[in-house]
Length: 375
Image 1 (cartoon, rainbow, N blue to C red):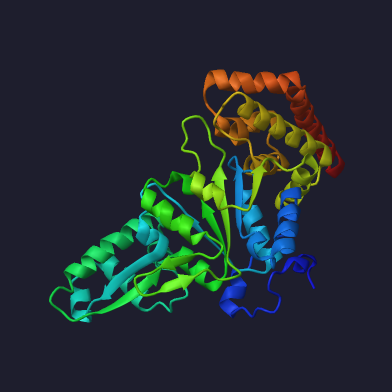
Image 2 (image 1 turned 120 degrees about the vertical axis):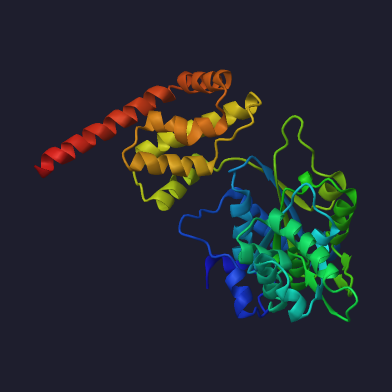
């Protein structure tokens, strides 16, 4: 029995082989943080308490603060298949519920462009397990937003080529509907970018604990195991805040920051294979100060875990810690000269620029000694 199975919400539930593959498997680099333990305990404690049930969770924080990693970890802890939907500004209701598509005849299909033929054939041959968006993303190797736009083009195209014919119609559910109906853990990324109020209303309605979704073919009710994890970047000046009605449907929220330095170092060791505690500690301190300074001074870029991993990996391969700091971290935050000066002054104040010089010098000496030993 794995250690996180204590949090399984429906241990008697039998998943299909395909669903088992969707339950996230924690890599060796994953170290549970306070947020993960807190959410897991709270959800498990309240799972069978009726109106006190926690099934909508908000993770709000900067890019790279580990929101998606945490959502996936909850999938592993709860034993639920993980899936996600990335919201975009022009989402409409078909992106929330799915779309009805006419199945056009093979003769009409052959008149279409090769790309359209490929996609429609993939849709027609699907087993209903994948959402239409996922089928299009795989068939054309495109993004989720591009798949949504392509689906709308196909609806129009298929309708034009089926005029005057008696055709069969098939409903292709969205990823949201699939997760909602089958009881998955669904990560809803950046719903604050959605412009259409009607789309937000449909999403709000679905997130009620006893909610339902009106499909063109039927009314479906929320599966008792369905969990929605909303992940959104912390709002900067001028950014659209998360819809109040959506926020009100959340039963647990977390303000996501960088993990503790100890967790950062341990994750970097496993992720990169680099084991020098002293060097990794200096790099982690640098990331923490840059992150704090950027937020304090309203600098919009972020110093997060992704930057930390790539920077540590470069240093492990012999790059200068101080030089690679700019290419792996600072220029990802900003390239504005005034903002860079603010970040450099913060590092200087905490003695970290000197520490990075020392780290680089120490690495050079270590390699020189190793080369002399091998001669």
